[in-house]
Image (cartoon, rainbow, N blue to C red):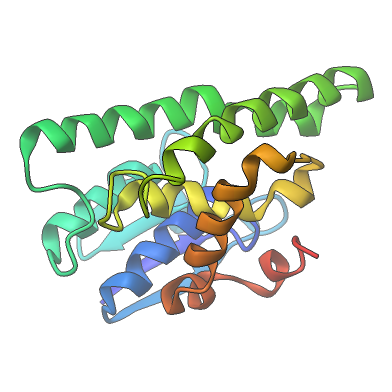
Amino acid sequence: MMTLYSGPSDLFSQQCRFVLFEKQMNFQIIDVDMFSSPDIELAHPYNTVPVLIDRELVLYEANIINEYIDERFPHPQLMPADPVMRARARLFLYRFEKELFSHVSLIEQSDQKAASKERQTISDYVTQYSDLLSKQKYLLGNEFSMLDISFAPFLWRLDHYGVKLGKDAAHLMKYAERIFSRPAYLQSMTPTEKSMRT
């Protein structure tokens, strides 16, 4: 049985939990508080969650964990089968890391003025997807994919981060509500994550 060591409020851990529940696999999740009770099994170069243990294999970093799960358990397939589309999906995921998720720590660590600027950057970035999502159901078209799994937990946390969206993000929020209603998404949430959104 696979074991996922997961942070109860960690964005990247929820992405991995979401993948596991979409696959409807046999697995266990162990919640870890990295600040007060680090688990000895989590020893790796960065001492972070999520960590996936599958027999002798130890993986860290959400994108690596999620692609491994998707390749090992191919139904439902979450990364595109076509190499060109798969490369585009990987580029999307890389851009999320560099241009979106990186702002979260800056909000949490910055003074009020700097944090406000980071919130506006996030708002502008996510709103740009609203027009795309007015024309298609999911980020890669009409097929649910790893991009949606990566994006949705972040959208869930916007209130928690203090990010406000305008009316021009209406299609984006309709998309988000569709993802939030998926059974696997609901199962992936911890009580802490459920409390992040009012």
